[in-house]
Length: 315
Image (cartoon, rainbow, N blue to C red; front, side):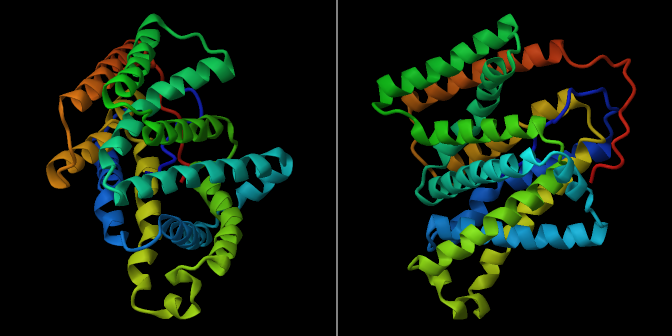
């Protein structure tokens, strides 16, 4: 999951269009279908897959940047050099998220991955309270309470800490927290992040004992499926960014739940992962929490009286 699907500023009202909803739906469906793609790469080491994802995403984003002549990020980083280090850190965090997700998919733990992305929004709210001293509304407190309860129930009923779900939830939420503050757009941030991570990937390939450590592999027929990781990562991000200009923030926030829902459906009905009453209880608590969170979000959505922001210069 990638996804830099994070609002960076306080949302303003935007008129929702049919094209915008369809564009957003396409983005969320692609993200939700990621298990179908990564399952095809099960023969490869998870770290190897992420190395390719970073490299090929960097190449795809570079081509996009050249076509669009997007170089304003250079002046932005010159004016605020601290964001070079912070962007590198955010890149490491999202790479950790990607690695955990791919490992989960290829070890038949897709259900736990979907749980992580269901928990994510509530973790994000909790982080906002801790880091930005934001005051939580009563329903938000109750929603977080249900999320904590789900983790406790899983420990008691299933006998283990849902570490995989928590890594996904916290890594994506911390990444989102950084993205809320960065002066870079989502595409520019992805370009800088991947550019700084590519040398680490090349170093890893050079010292690891995997198929991609051999130069001839990069010129073989087997490389094409791994190369798809680039466009598979970039395309939904571009679609999502386009939808942010055409769909109201409140509606887009609700649609965010489509991705973990699609992942959940794939895990249960396509890959037939175990789903008993104990796991149902864990998910039920999260779903109730998200329902309360969504009600609160809807009640406090931006006023319809606000005029749409001019975001035409954003990807």
